[in-house]
Amino acid sequence: MATEHDTMTRTVLKVGGLNAWYGESHVLHGMDFDVGEGEVVTLLGRNGAGKTTTLKAIMGLMEKRSGSVEFGGVETISLPANRIGRLGIGYCPEERGIFSSLNVEENLLLPPVVRKDGLTTEEIFDLFPNLLERLHSQGTKLSGGEQQRVALARALAPGPRIMLMDEPFSGLDNRLRDEIRDTTLAVLKDSGTAVLLVTHEPDEAMRMADDIALMRDGKIVQQGAPYNIYNAPVDREAVAFFSDVNVIRGTVQGALTETPFGQFLAPAVPEGQEVEIVIRPQHLKIDFDRNGSGPLATVQDGTPARGVVVRARFMGNESLVEFRMDHDGSIIKATVPNVFLPKPGKPLWLTIRRDRCFVFPASG
Ligand code: ATP
Image (cartoon, rainbow, N blue to C red; front, side):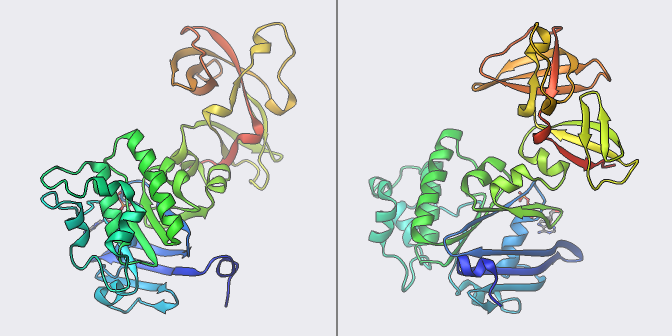
């Protein structure tokens, strides 16, 4: 049956209830996701979440797997890896597999890289014009960025319908990495290739992905567009994966939780349940009016709570200020645009943007 996803983009890879084991150890637990033509889906998670194992299970490289893995409608769960490899899958491993003793062209032409019906060398160089400059650089060591481009060009050469990429930008320095991410994304989008990209970096996922599958302990805990994952996180850990967080605890009474920052709505949380109000540093505000003679904070901002500056650091576009709160001695972090570097010991009042905080049942 055609799903909404199928009608928007043609599904290239469809994974359903995928499980995988290393020996007796059950590592993937019921993974479900699709990747459509021209779509970039990222598997995002901490080390050991099971991202690389997912790629291996898709390619048929796990000794034991179950569930369903369809490429272009072909079920592959019981096919051997060499048959799966012929279905139009490109793979960019984390190690890149580039040979420093070979020049760019030789690396690209390594069998079985350029296959029948794939791209010609000229077409590859059309995609990556700056590789040409390095073509005759025999003996010169390729830089990390060049290696990344060669590895990508090589994986794209056979004209795959889907690219599986494992941490493709690791080991590159920051500025180069941003540039290479953008070029790579442009090349992949132009070619209409479906992409499944593994990363442990939230910034990378936000920059590259149409859809993010957030993984933990061999499971997808949340999947959606970057905006939704960031703004409607499923739990405290999902918020904390993308940024620093502040956590304020309280107990629900009559669908409300009373805190030193005022009352917070806790709909659908049982009476008497302890909750965590999770707030990112950029959504705390320093109530300068309270500190001067102006009006108090608006209703939306709740009640101001007082803290004392512990430390303030300039971060470039903003300043990060840490406070020790008067009410319980906890540390709260707030970011303030531009330069704001109050001296340690200075008392200030803080409010919380209630529309930007998340309320979850307390963990642990
Ligand atoms: P990383 O970013 O560190 O590669 P990952 O999210 O890709 O992390 P995996 O490498 O897929 O995680 O590992 C998932 C789980 O499987 C981890 O608990 C890991 O220790 C285990 N694991 C990985 N490879 C093997 C192996 N060859 N044999 C046994 N267990 C393994």
